[in-house]
Image 1 (cartoon, helix red, strand yellow):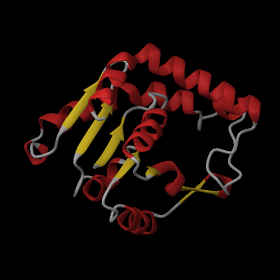
Image 2 (cartoon, rainbow, N blue to C red):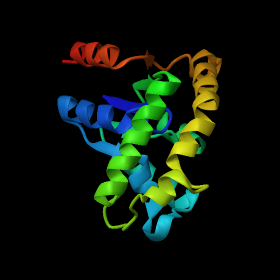
Image 3 (cartoon, rainbow, N blue to C red):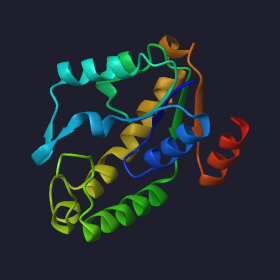
Image 4 (cartoon, helix red, strand yellow):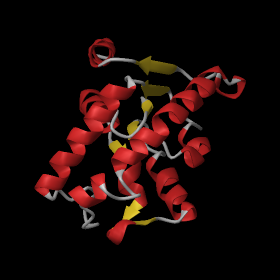
Length: 175
C-alpha cells in the first residue's frame, strides 16, 4: 500500500506515519528528511523531486508530508491519502509541546543535518514552527477540503481523521 499523510505542522503526521509504516511493514518516508540540509538549508526542488521519485518506486510506503508543490509526484501512484485534521487548539498544543521537547533535548531533527530546535527559534523567531502552525492551520484545512472535492483527485481515496481515537480506529481496520 502507498499512503501519503498530510496535515498541518504539529498535527501528528510523523507519529501516525511511523506507526502505520510499522503496522504495514513498509518504508516510512519523511518529506522533511528529504528536504532539509545542514544549517537549515533546503534542497532545491529538482533534487528533492528526483529523491522523491526514486523512493516512491517501491511497491509500498508511508509518506509523511505536505510539500504541496510535489503533489503531482506524491499522488501519481498513491493508494490512500490520510488527512490529519485535528482542531486548531489540539494541533497548536501538540506543536508547542513538541517544540519544547525538541528544544530542551537539543534533538537533531533530521539525521546528519545538525538542525536542532531552540527555544529562541521555536518561540521568538520568524522561522518559528509555532508561528507556522498558527499561520497555516486554516489555509491548509481549506486546501485539503478543496483537494478532496476536486474532480482531478476523485480517483484517489481520502480519509479524514479528526481525532486520535478516530485515528486508532482507522489503524485497526488496516490489520
